[in-house]
Image 1 (cartoon, rainbow, N blue to C red):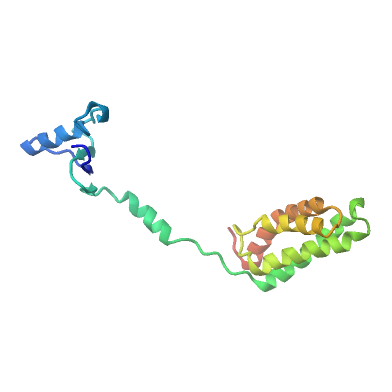
Image 2 (cartoon, one colour):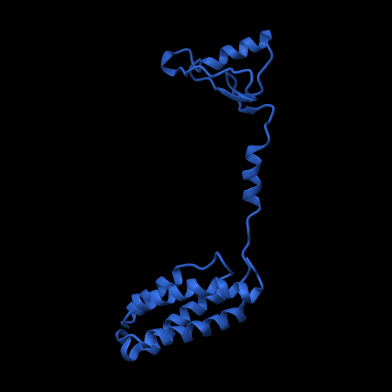
Amino acid sequence: MAGSSVLLAFSPPLPSSPSSSLRSHHSHSFFASPLHSLPPISQNPSSKYHLSFLSKPSLSLSPSPPSFFSFFLRSATSEYVFPDPIPEFAEAETEKFRSHLLQKLSKKDIFGTSVEEVVGVCTEILSNFLHTEYGGPGTLLVIPFIDMADTLNERGLPGGPQAARAAVVWAQKHIDEDWKEWTGDSD
């Protein structure tokens, strides 16, 4: 029997009959060799389904229970599509962000005379993200904030990590809520 295919079948318990005793025999062993034996499977007649191993080359579910797999198939084909970015929202939100960040970073000595340039870099990156990627709650990514810190560091501007942190804290508190208000979504 080595090398033969095995059929895995789920079926309701069979009434006592000559064919059910044959199926019951095959339910207890996988191969004749003791190295490949499986423990006996419970044949409780009150259970709705039992597991059978039959020596056939196909997989069968009979009768099919309420389709467990159909849930996954439906889920895979019906995925949520986020809305497109709204340019007017992106403009308004960018201006709110710029105003907040300028006020916040002006209070810190670390930025010195570069505060306007730092705010400009962060604002440009957030604006690009809001215009091209952001489509409402669930689409706010960390990538633009990492880009802010990296760009500020690459340009030799002070306080890259601090500016990016201030930006992400503001974004987490405001962008999704402002989107909901803008679109009238009460969720």
